[in-house]
Image 1 (cartoon, helix red, strand yellow):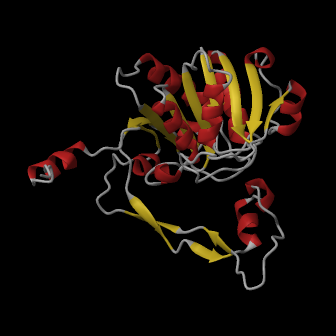
Image 2: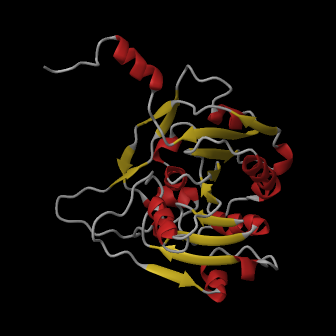
Length: 298
């Protein structure tokens, strides 16, 4: 099986290193990940004539530059090829499909493991899922995987334990319909406390109080640095500029049920939501037609 791997936290993140260690048992992996942090990019691409840097990484560079998780699996050296692209997650998928996989597309694209939940309306902004969308747009099965914590040194052992079987189940039961991609979210709890797996729906909600004055203490509280996000600890400003940062508080929609993905995780389960690249609301189209929106101009 040929598998394309990417993420939105950048090629040096722990999550993508763990994902490659999990997935190398399934076949040959091609990793094309962003050079820098690209969270919140959704399906954005690097348009125009902008110069985009790409670099293949040898095995020594992978060991030195990606997150050190200890000894790599024996089959890793021969089965995994790493590179980075200074672009968005969706662009990383595009690049792979136009270079390595130009003659034959990969069997599946797996994006992650994301540091942070991509449940509920976070899925609308997610660069992790933007990469999966790009794959789905090209008719390739795709899975986005996330862990509900921003900790850069998160414990991914639950994903290591349960995701291989989830992957097998998805790949053994792919639909005939094209354009499907799967959003898999793990709660940030020990593996032994996870109750099981639940299929569900995208929850609804919104963020409020989203902008605050820039404060480096917020980064320290989260255990990260601005540099990890491709930023500077001492950003330069022009006269009259104020610095803000986007954080916010999530407000749950009161109509959500326990089949909503973020509630599934709160209940101690792994959530799986199937999305479609076709975002048409067919019921609303029919309603508009019934109201006389279809007209001929004479």
